[in-house]
Image (tube, rainbow over all chains, first blue to last red; front, side, top):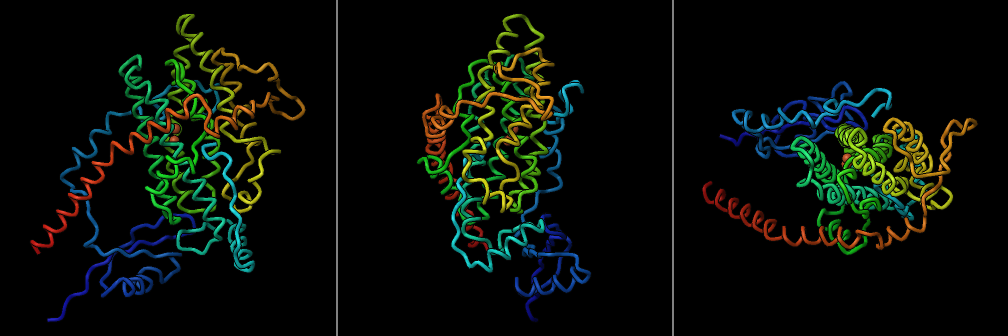
Length: 94
Length: 325
Ligand SMILES: [Fe+2]
Ligand SMILES: [Fe+2]
């Protein structure tokens, strides 16, 4: 059996100045091939000005079951938000 | 500002390419890491973004000085959160600079051996708790004034870093002003401390915007390239105009006898800082220059074993994974 092409994650910059956003995935033999496929699959209607591809295997993701320990500690730190500090309107925007 | 006196680098590129580049800038397009760019643009940006990053990192020191001595647990948590944000700002900016082809270690070495600068403001000491109020209110206030327009700068990674920074910055100024409000509503001694902190911070804060436009030789190329959006004096004026009513609200006096409202211009007239002091501080002779750099040097040296250990551990894991395959 021939070797299966690896999976690539595709990121597109929609407009000048914006960051690349994940739009989906595809299979391709190598990075050059992945860019060509991404052009055909994801930018047929002028959706982008730039494409990034990353082999899916290269991505390390946080585990969904770690959600609690990862994000709960930020929950009670309300003082990281500007609204925590009561500043009278007459001072002007701050 | 956080990037004061950034010298625009000369550029020796093909005039046709330069013109086409300028057309892109004028059309409001963002320049991205893989795009062609003039050598001078690249070098000036490395200097500016690097200096901005160094300022965020060195800027942690004067406030870090008070974390263990904050008057309440709540103030301590607030200050800790703010200083932690500044570390993040430094990291976003170092990464933006790295897209231009300089490494983080190179930038750190240039800071430590004096080839790169950081903002003059962080070479002043923080003598009392009221300085935490004055720094948040005035220093972060001045930083915001400079960073908001930089969200529109022409270099994509720098502009996007600024968007993140600005979002986080607003709580910094408010927590500072909140400290000032508590101090001026306290006893006579606390109010005196607040006034003293304002007296010492006012002119150094005005200096953050860099030399007066008439002495600012580096601006025009940077403004054409949209690396710099406003002139030093424009931003300084805006800062004075916004800050005077805030000081009035606190019942504090801005230490400038020449400060008057000018009906005609619709702005406050103010006395310029002592520029000799500014140039002196920038060239290494401020009250804390030696302390700040030696603190950075110590952090760099003391962290060496950890950086090496992490690299060695990663290498060991990689070989183990390879063996398991
Ligand atoms: Fe910051
Ligand atoms: Fe800040």
